[in-house]
Image 1 (cartoon, rainbow, N blue to C red):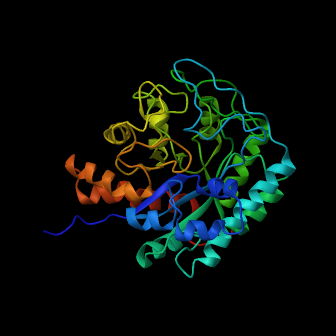
Image 2 (cartoon, rainbow, N blue to C red):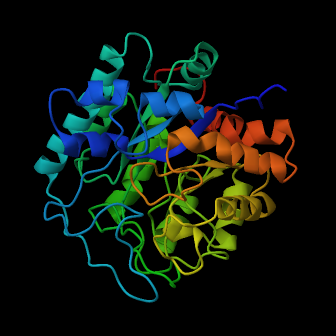
Length: 361
């Protein structure tokens, strides 16, 4: 009896660069390439689970460590997570440079096993060659100066996706806090500078990630941007009433622009009670996926795992367990063409629409 075909998965969000940055050491790149049985994503885990590439986030942690990543310190049951302090420009830039360098070092030391991608043709070639295909993403634009000079530099270094805010306020807007139950309508939207940033990203053809924006910020981007609306790692508010999740009205707007949602594996955003609990059924991922299919359509849904940034259902666990999710889809009766769309083809489509073909702006 032949084994089921392994489907490649292109992922909308992971935080492995932050994990390696916090780990420190001159061998951090080697630790990713060879694996050290830590975290949820490294190259051996990726190969085992069919993780073919994705948006690799750079996130600058709060200096006081008061708040962690999206799945690690959310408030529950009406509580409010502590507000993360604003970050200063220079320390934020230093951290960003370190993580960009780390990704480029991983590529350089990989002996051809990892290739940083700057256009869809690069990703497609990586899939064909069996080479890991990371794309540089920034989660929270605290390192971007008001004149957007660093944005130009980072673009040349490979930046192709940017979330204006994480779940804290900055010069560009207001992130949605970690609350459950809560509406995502939690405060003001983009600042004037934030609206300028959206225009700059449109000109450079950098994807704009909506996942950590509050609802008013979401609608500000929808009114300004000429690109498909994309939330790289978000779930359905109708199933889990977390402030980080998207309402059906937001999902409809994403559908209207030919955009995309990457379903997040963080248990906090999967469960109706917002709890961090690895003993959460993998089927909850599929329930959010099916809600997205109903409201966004089969061309606008994929995965945004949040590996190394969240508590993940034990049935997936790490990138090595991704094919378990594929098997759940098969048992639910999903055909192979739809599975391929959800696993990688939809991401290639929306990235192609956002970036265009290989180009220099």
